[in-house]
Image (cartoon, rainbow, N blue to C red; front, top):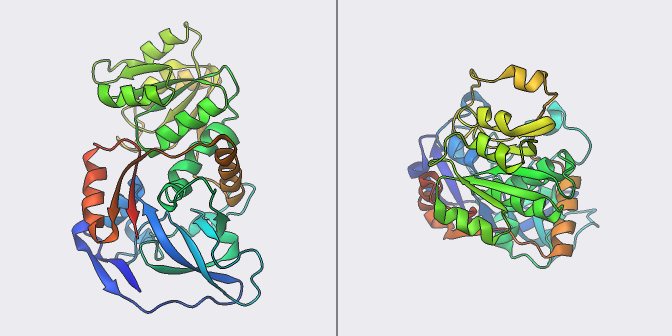
Length: 338
């Protein structure tokens, strides 16, 4: 088989396409012909050695997201059949319930090999069946970005009809959050630095649009949109440069789902009185379990929800795909066809 391998953690230019032995499924495992993967912000960190001692820094097959087709069964497997289309859960050992140190430790594409290979073996508890209405490329965008947004809006956020939700930017997580919030019957505010991207978000159902370049105090604008009450839920993706605005606009008793650190990971300017005196719930979101992935897939199938795919690159052009993601020009998910 062929696989994309990171020679050393010095950036996407250190990726090379290699011939490797075909794996064989063991007891309780299936062999999957991988068809697609997708890029996440964490992947760019890993390619540059950003996780340091927590990651493998040479000869790593990268990327955490993947989807494909079962081509062989190991002894004892009854949950899947040859020909089944499957999607890989981001946290392989987190089946359900709350996370713990054990089921969060193993995440493909960081300390162990990821999805950029033509063939991979998996224990059956790692996989869910791909919804029939999704292509393999679309399914490959679900494990990290899709499930993170689902956890923020549905599993942990419990967003209800008529509530007002803010989601930041127009990357994969944000657009999934927009789609799932609309599915829940919520009203949605989308922020972006691009009027063109905001117009596209409106086509997806966004009710209110804020250009944060033109309006750096966008938290006050979101507060005005809410009629002074405050928004019910903020999907916080920016980190250092956006959290203050999120706290400015969230209502007393509202929720800020802490997901991304795209603009930095330190919060020296946090307005603690806005949190404590107004009983704001700051909820950390770490992707989700296989049960969450299954529930999300069922909901998407019932309502015909499709991920927003920005672009698709062949595996040999992974470095170009990474460069496109890092440029910030994308709208939705950047995917790899294997």
